[in-house]
Amino acid sequence: MTSDLPRASVQDVLNCSFTVWYPLFERYSIKSVMLNLTDDILEYLRSDDFYLPTSANEAMDEMRRVNANPSSDDDDDEDHISFPEFEQKIKDVLDQYEAVFPKLNWSSPKDARWMISDNRLKCTNLADIFLLLKSSDFITHDLCEPFKFCYDDDHSLLSTIKYVLVLREWSALQPSKEFRCFVKNNRIIGISQRDSENYYEFIGSSADQIRDNIIEFFNRNIQNKFPSTDFVIDIYRKNSNKLYILDFNPWGPMTDSLLFHWPELLNLSTENNNEKPEFRYVNSQNGIKPNSYTQYAMPKDIADISRERDLNKLADVLASQIQIQNNDVDSDNERNS
Image 1 (tube, one colour):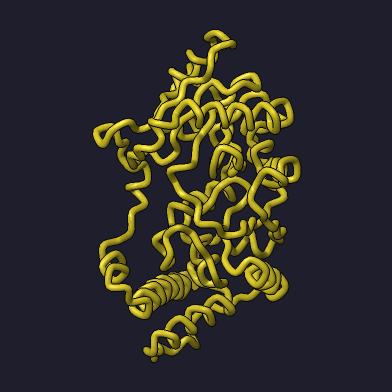
Image 2 (cartoon, one colour; image 1 turned 90 degrees about the vertical axis):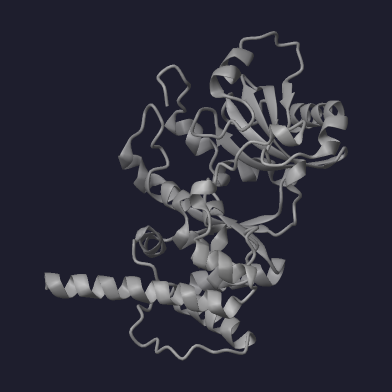
């Protein structure tokens, strides 16, 4: 991150927390429930030890039973932890929504989506949710260093954050209809197709209408109502009459600029305020941008199992990896005792 690029303030990052923006714009977003994360849950999530709460392990056992091949492993040596009240609240939300998309204050665990059978982050049980939360580097960033790239970073502020688990009602959103808007001084200066890995022919033919719809939605419902004047917002355009807010992000290189570059966005912010924002989209197969999450790709052995659609094998592989790590921890403890 070079010195001439913008760096967000701690307050700008706090403003992008789901706990701040969702109450302001709930009517324009997807139905969601926020569950407070207590100190014991935060300690568990920040821990390097990889084991699931008892109820989540029971959910994985149920996956094995459904697939008619129960595991014969003895679970007596596994670590046991539970958060009964918290887990019941999650179950209540699952009963209400049937399936959810999980995230914390800022990030979703999309880098760990290969951990569950539905890699769209569609969660239907406790095991799905806890596997994602414990496997995600993005979640770890939220929990341990959310202000890392701020010019006024103060690590002592970490203890003041009111962390929540956000469970968003599952909806099979079409990536082709998601757009990232870059806002400077409460004005959209650039719009990017969010799924820059794919070419969608309809975007080019409808570009002017898409841009006008987004500008109208923003000016009517969002402009001058968000606490920061510079920010990035993700908007879902279901059709010309139905647009939804997906998320807010800080203004600066900590947020992916997608089909722009941050120096370009800085130049755009100084141009004529009367001009319509520049709208960038993939206009041919040759314009596809490489996947920015390649480094978080699924390990080959699990990818092979997923292609076979053998959930029982997948559950056993994950269980064996957890057991290996726990055995390593036990060995270290014995050597240090």
